[in-house]
Image (cartoon, rainbow, N blue to C red; front, side):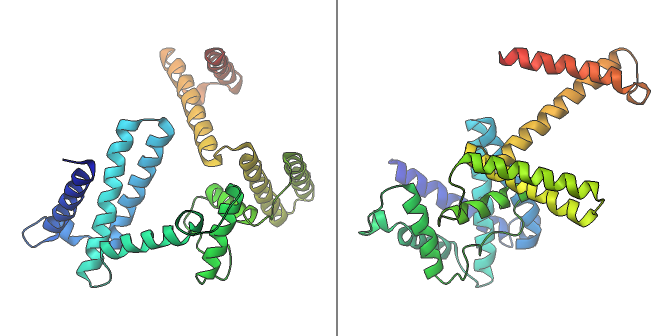
Length: 265
C-alpha cells in the first residue's frame, strides 16, 4: 500500500470514528460537546504540540499532531451536523488559499527573495478584502506572539528598522522613558512605557532570530528549576522557606546557577 493510500485510509478512519462517537449509538460525552465546550481541550492540545516541538521530542510531536487533527475533525463534524460547512469545505478553502497566495509557485509571478514572497502574501490578502495588514490577528494570541506578528506584518511591507543598532537604541530609549515615568510617579505612563519596552525587546528578538515566547518560557522553567533546588536543599535541613533569610536563599541559588554555567562550558 502506498503512503498516500495509507494516509487516505487512516484519515477516513478518523473521520468515521468521530462520526460514530457522535452518533446515537456512540458516546454520550462526545455527543454533548459543542464548538465552545471543546475550545479548552483544543487549546491544551495546541500548547502540548508546541511544547513537544520546543523539546525536540518527535515521538511526542507525532502523538500531539494526531490529537490536534482529532479536534479539527471534531469541530468540522459538528459544523456539518448543523449544516454550516464540511471538512471538505475547509480543505478546499486552504488549498485554494495556498495556491492563490503562492503565485510564484502556481503562477507566473517572479520573486527575488523571501521578502518579496512575504510582501506578495500580504498584498494578496489585501486584495482578498482585508482593509488593513493588521486584520486577522487573533485577539487571543499570547501578548509576546501578538507583538511579534504585528512587527512581522509591518516589516513585510518595508516598515522596519534597517539595522539592529537602531533597535538597541530604541530599547535604551524606552528604558529611559520608563525611568522618567517612575520618577514622576505617573502610573499611566509607567504602564505605557513598560509595554513599549516589551514591544522593543520583541523587535530585538526578531532581529536576533529568536522566539521571544520560547525564550521567556525557557527562562521561567530555569527559575522554577533553581527555586525547587532551594526547596530541596532546605528540606534536607528540615528548614522552612519562611524561616530562611534572603541571604541564605541567594547563596543556594548561586550554587545551582554556578552548576548550570559549568554544565554549559
